[in-house]
Length: 92
Picture 1 (cartoon, helix red, strand yellow):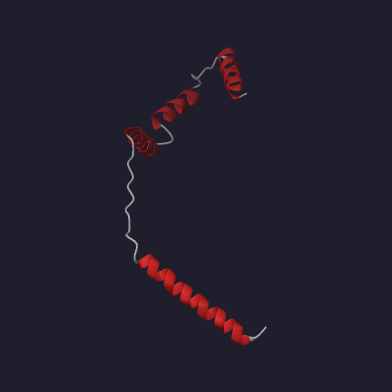
Picture 2 (tube, helix red, strand yellow):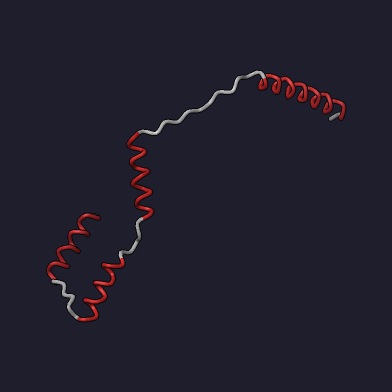
C-alpha cells in the first residue's frame, strides 16, 4: 500500500465532510410538541399522591402493639386459613 493513496482518500473524505456539513446548515429546525392526555395527568397525580403517602400507618401499628402486649388480639384460625387460601388461589 502506498502512503500517497491514503492521503488522496483522506482528502476525498474531508471534501465529503465539508459538503455534508453545508447541507445540514441549510435545513430548518423543527420543534417537537408533546401533549399529555387527561388520563395521563390523572395517573401522574395519583402516582405523586401515592409517593407522598407513608408506607406505614403509625396509628394502626400502635393499636396492634397495644393489643398484642395486652393479650387482647385474637384471630380466628378459620378466618386466617380462609384468607390464606384465598390469596393462594389469586396467585396461582
